[in-house]
Amino acid sequence: MSDSPRPLTGAPPLGERLIEAALAGCAAISLLTSAAIVLVLAQETFAFFHAVPITSFLFDTEWTPLFERARFGIWPLVCGTALTSAVALLVAGPLGVLAAIYLAEFATPRARDRLKPMIEVLAGIPTLVYGYFALRVVTPCLALVIPDLQGFNALSAGLVMGLMILPTVCSLGEDALHAVPQTLREGAVALGAGRLATLFLIVVPAARSGLLAALTLGLSRALGETMIVAIAAGQQAHLTLDPRSPVETMSAYIVQISLGDAAAGTVAYRTIFAVGAALFALTFATNALAQRWIAAARRVG
Image 1: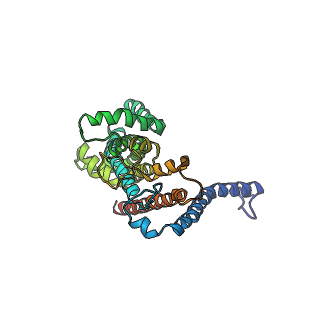
Image 2 (image 1 turned 90 degrees about the vertical axis):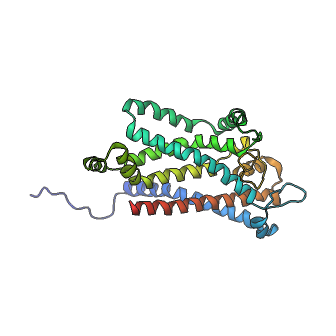
Image 3 (image 1 turned 180 degrees about the vertical axis):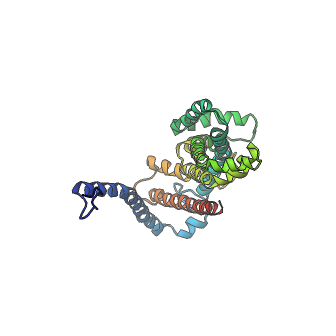
């Protein structure tokens, strides 16, 4: 008599089919949610563009939808969003990557067990607290060394946003460095490379796709941040790239109008959806471009 297992034949049991259907349904939730968001945005955005020419939205340089002489140029909000996000990435990028390198390559197990939870605590602080910290602590400190700094400004908001996304960049960057095979390090050492040469010429280039992914996720988080910029940046839609000046971001404007400054169904109210669609498109384009860079980095690696 043969002891080999009998091949599986026929349809799978009912329980397996139910579990498979449940898992497929869970996977479909994200797709359905994204489709519903796009549908609502598209419907209300088209209604907005029935009243406002798209040329005005794309080429005007003023954003004053609540004024008597309303102007609907999106660029002041785009510049405010890009400015604060760029400042945040300039803070979180170098600090997050260097912290990840230290935790992955230099820290002792005891130091890693102490430092990593301290960094990750930053991710649990409410953004409302970050916003008031930027307004009441960071801005007065910066004013001591930057005399022309205004009370509400993009610089302090961007700096604190960088601290907020620092745990994301650090944690994902550390995972990317840990994923580099140990054999690459051992091979470099066997060829006579020192520790720093092995790190910066072998390990970091091998992990660059993961590091780029960490920076991309941090940037996406900064693009959609609301409370920090709403509190500390000033909510003034100026077309400027001066970080000392007050600015308004897309997400902060959505919050402002959602508080009841415009009646439902009006053109001013529908600007929420037009700005939301623009923010969605900006985030999607940023992620798509970053994915191309990550794929190119993986091919080179």
